[in-house]
Image (cartoon, rainbow, N blue to C red; front, side, top):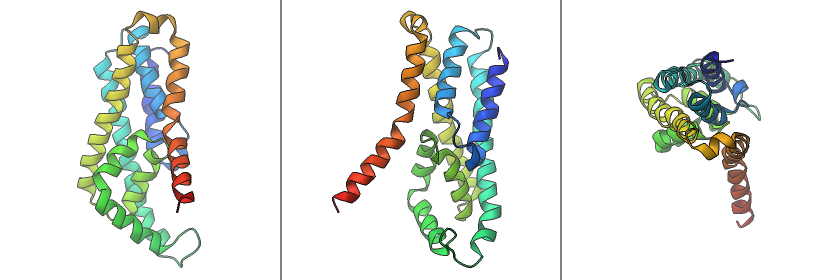
Length: 193
């Protein structure tokens, strides 16, 4: 894609963070690989400009997810309780975000499915829009420049440049591990109860 890779990644990051349907996209890997590509192949594209565009897409995508949750949530949960849509779940969600709001929103950026799920559920929970925007920005500033810069600076190392396939595969594997480890940890924790 050449220089259009930056735009392509921005679109994919927006799609991943805007709706739960995009949550299968590999955001962490895309950011790291874009940074790596900017230091090796796309040297004509300024790193800060690419970071700015992708950051804007990430924050905008999460704002769309929040808006969807805010608009659709009350309609969905005002219906009669079912096994899936339950007013009790909404109350627990509100309590969770009132207690863990900042940490949950900021750290969810680094967990694949939660990147899309958290904005939607925060929107459903009557969490303030301005407050959410602040945490959304902080999370986006930690996630996008952090992973892109890691890829960019690793791409300047000669060993990385000559073994780029190993580095890419290694990062994809490492960025995929948190969710399975968390699931395994919860299963082991539940067995001990």
